[in-house]
Length: 171
Image 1 (cartoon, helix red, strand yellow):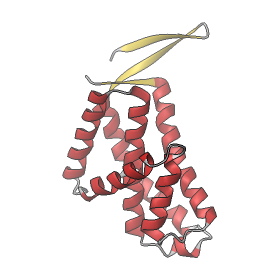
Image 2: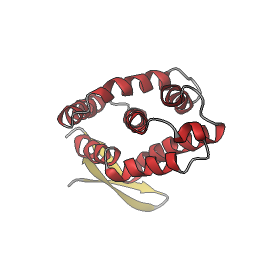
Image 3: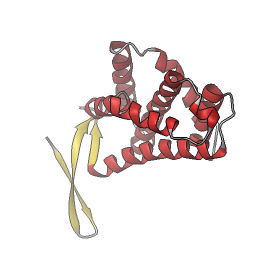
Image 4: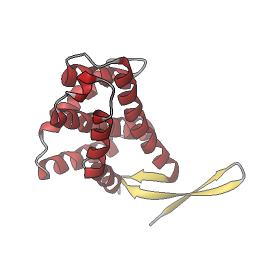
């Protein structure tokens, strides 16, 4: 592995260089893991929102996966601003979705892409509005909306924390 040395505040910090495909693979496995699905199910089942608890569970999980795929792409684009890197990530994602029989998520992700891009202020809020519309016919309580928005920001924050210790590469 190659390491990049950075000088920060007089101290040395080494950033591990990670190929974008390797990083993407780890995040895709996380998004599609049983643990992640169970985490979303806990949020749904423990909600005080009757409408949310009655939501179609499979549809909810697919929408969350599509939203998380979009957030993963957003993080890479905003951090690296590298079209080639994003292209490699998208190709890797497309191959993963095809191999796992989840091609339908590409369409769902594109809907979240449009929602994210529709707001000059907070694309995640717009993504949440879309999820509310698609999963609960726009009837989620304000508390559920806030909870799911915080779940999306938690995921996005985790990616940016990763970027503090790694540097994605196109190698």
